[in-house]
Length: 441
Image 1 (cartoon, rainbow, N blue to C red):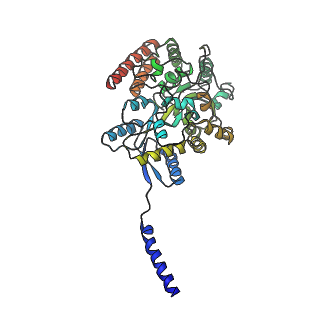
Image 2: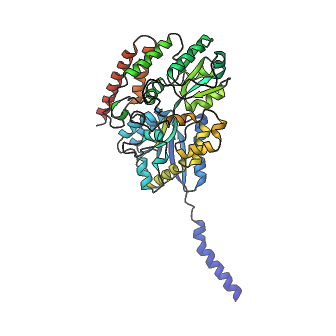
Image 3: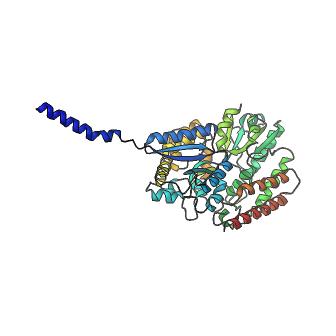
């Protein structure tokens, strides 16, 4: 009798348990992330997503490469119109104004983190990084992801051959000019060169000397900003570059990143380029590389101020399911962890976005083992950012930058004076700004 009762009890218990055992396990919520990184950077991005996915079971970040920055942003805009947009899209820094103008399409990060009750402390982020992506009230609109700034690289072997101290990089433009002349005299095909001509010689040059590129806090105060970089200091600087160009003390090498291989091959003794190219330079150069901060004109009061960033940020797009936004907020909180940011910084060469990640990297001895890696952070944090050195937010700036670089080429080739070239760049750029303003009332 007792045995029968036990058998019937077990049967009832099994029947009650069967629906629970057969119920499907709830799948993780997929969160699609469109990005513009390929090669090693793409692999590091995939690893970042995989690490987050393994850290919890509720959400799964799904990275999707969509081409370069312009292609990725364009794809996101078209996808939003057809309601097939991802939750997250990576957007380069100069398209910030364009994203802000897409009213109703974006979910500001500060609102997302507040709505989802995720810990979020804007003061923890490096001001010169976060400032690019905040409004005038300090509210973060998008999430800083990959940030870089230009620094100075130099060939220590060529420095020794020219009788220059290989442990002392030039700090000012007069010092750089003198060092480049010595390099040329010693047989170097070019003294120094630069890539991304506008980013380095107009945008960062202006920030480092605390002079405006445009009114309205370089456009951060409104889309009715007016370009003003045809000032006396900028004219003087471009005129000096054009004068040095005649003897290849400075040698213009083209737009985007076309100058970098010339430095790697040992043609140019000094190179002004992105801090994010450090790994490539070290991997492809057969000489010892030295590092320094961007040069400045020492007679300009307050210089050097601080440099500004390039790179990209993560925008959240609206009209996705609520569950996805919970996952996005958790992912951004994960990205903000010091150990996560420190690993991203160390593995890619991009800067950490928080002071805690920088301090952790320093305490781990990484900067001692990797000379030059701390210079970018030190440079953007030289002084608290001003309205002139916080960054810029100008509509159609991709097109404006093209106009600037076309006019710089006219000055470097001697076809226009520095004043004429900069006046033309400002005039062309302001026409584009007014077109953008009319399109976004």
